[in-house]
Image (cartoon, rainbow, N blue to C red; front, side, top):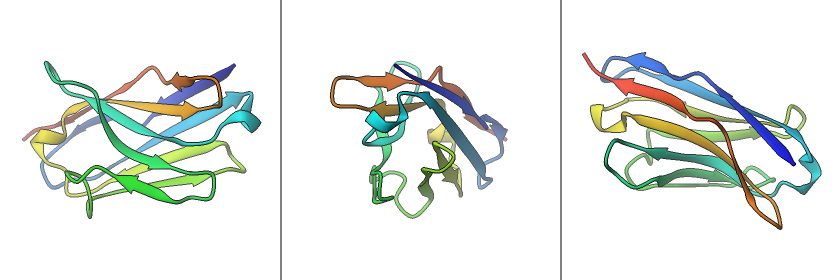
Length: 115
């Protein structure tokens, strides 16, 4: 079992920044990819960023150049630095961790971009 605890969401003005964190505990050695999805009201969940164990990243086109994902394996934590935030980034952001057998999810953290 893997448990994921997220933090760092909130309300920010357009153009502002937020940093999300996701700490993993439990069967850490089984984890491969980690990263972030988001889901806006009445929209499907979309992949925002994925991060390999080596720190290689992949991003959705909508966030490239603005968001940066990173991973600290010593702390079993992944981060999502979000800059130049736009109202369309408003969503619940979910951390995920993939193992050979299943995907684990965090509880979600709300990010609201509004003036």
